[in-house]
Image (cartoon, rainbow, N blue to C red; front, top):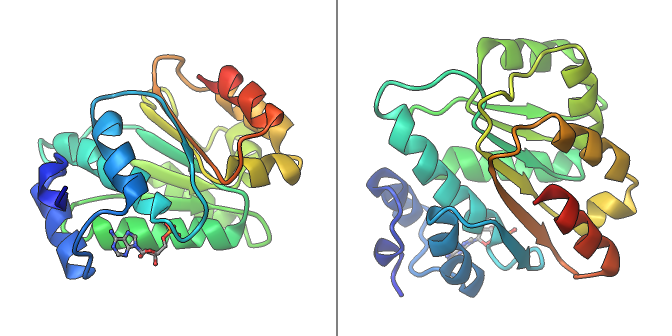
Length: 201
Ligand code: AMP
């Protein structure tokens, strides 16, 4: 199936073309239509399969539907990822696929000063890509507004569990609106991942 039949926003399709992608990868073909339709989803996919675009392309399409019509306050999408490197990689993807959209994106991770991140959150951002530990710190200081959150992505969920982020993830998820779409990506499907999926759905 070509990209243009998946139901993505035309401006995002243009960016995908400019990135040189000719056809969707299997995880993209499988995941994009149900995500656009509003389903929760568990994706079992390794790095290198195109999994980042599998969730960023449909989420950006959904954000574009409102951004284009004048915008909406508060953060609408949150992506949690285990490491700073992955957060930055996801951000790079989002900025590339969203380059023709008026999109506000913020990243949150530890090991660097908090103030630029706090300022970015307070300025208002539609999409936050974050490591759980630092995000929880900033949420405790009321820097993020998740009252209008609609989309939650847990990327590399197995790695986040291995790194001991389960208590932080639980705490973050507890403070999000329950009526939302949740997407979970993991390289492996273990008992722990199954338990997590029940907790976050
Ligand atoms: P990921 O699995 O998300 O880490 O993606 C691995 C690499 O594949 C990244 O460099 C992407 O830019 C690239 N990629 C993602 N989707 C496609 C596609 N449909 N065609 C060609 N390359 C892609």
